[in-house]
Image 1 (cartoon, rainbow, N blue to C red):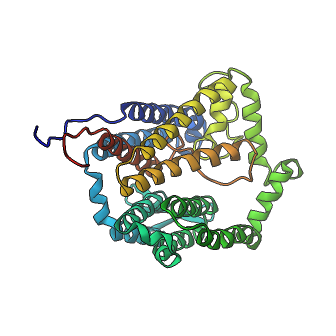
Image 2 (cartoon, one colour; image 1 turned 90 degrees about the horizontal axis):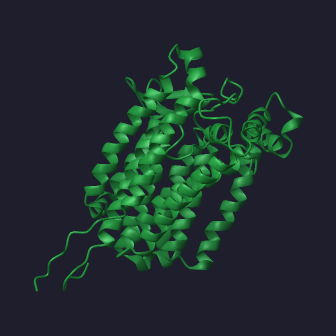
Length: 374
């Protein structure tokens, strides 16, 4: 027989669920923002139209990544890292960076707005996966881990300067996870983990607004019109939903009671409109996507696809978990979007494209060979 690779299909269920969530996100962005969009911009479809554009571009990115030979990302190791750092630095350039609510998190080029931190997370994953795959034995030593640690710290530093504590935490946890699954010895891993655990409370203490958020988390009713306001309104929304919700488009909290209803706190509006049962169904779908990602990780044929698939899955899982814990008041409030659903074109496009990479890896995992090593 010829050494012929038979045509293989990837995990099509993953793609279907991702597209369904993204479509649901467009609908919920409209539902949660139509009142504020009309009041602030004179167009109730303002945010929904932007999300729809992001969805369409995301579909292109998803399909493209389904067929792009993902192994070629290995050659983009330094480019992906450099691009991430450059984009993050550009937010501080006057006239190019856009400030909102006291934070410089966006780049504006004409009518296009880009959030570099959303891109940098995946740039870091590509860099780390490429670096580890070249010489896997290097990751077992502290010296061999330094490039990944320096890359992670550099990205975290630029993001915290924006400031954006939530995404900084996300990248920091991602770095620790990659070092661990990459094979770093426990004694060296602890040398990295302990300073990280010390740094987190330090970052909270040095910024008064973070201390205020922590205080509001512990007792939101102590400042119901200030720091505790957003959490209280989120809990009102979730509580109003009951078992089956008040019905789609019938949220009351979206009438400018709940800040950032279309972005960081869109899950609260979903809970209000679809109730506890609706939230359970949504979480089942999101957890199933995470399960699919982990299954792809487990079936990976090489170290590069193993780390790459792990990183993509971890970013998605981290943001889903953190967002859910925030809107339910389980952890202190922090601004992090619900992936594939919250308003934000950069996040939507990058996450959909990354899911295309996951599908691509699953397709590679399923290739059957006759006498040919994969």
